[in-house]
Image: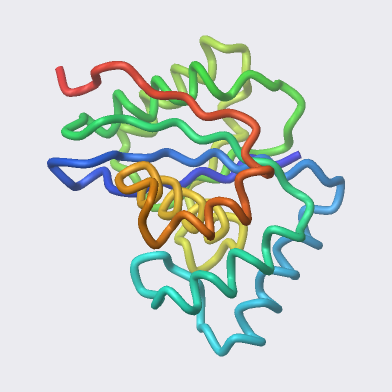
Length: 185
């Protein structure tokens, strides 16, 4: 099992922030990533990124990935937040399994953020060697986490809006939804 982590809306001052922890529950993570790359290729996307795609492509992408073997856990926070504290809270409350090969985190974080996350992992008995940060372009699993994070934030900001049909398409894949505590202090 591999965990892919991405966030959405952490730079905003209102609405929700979302950390989406996507657990690949198949023994063949390569199959998941290959399938996502094929979905992107068939729809003429270089790589999927929630903020860069129109609603039509978001819909096509999410409907296709909903058929793939994964589950997701979503932690939501009300803005404004301190990103590192919110991610730390999400890891402590959502990352409860111990049997995984790697945690893949979107984006290069400053060294102090990585040190803080490694401390959380060590405190939970998880080897820090399992934490890797990658660019979104190099991991289809992180792009899946980006799609779920973007959809979750959009849906929870406006449950009756444009995201509602997409949320219904993928909500059965989401096993946990947590609303995080105050993380702006």
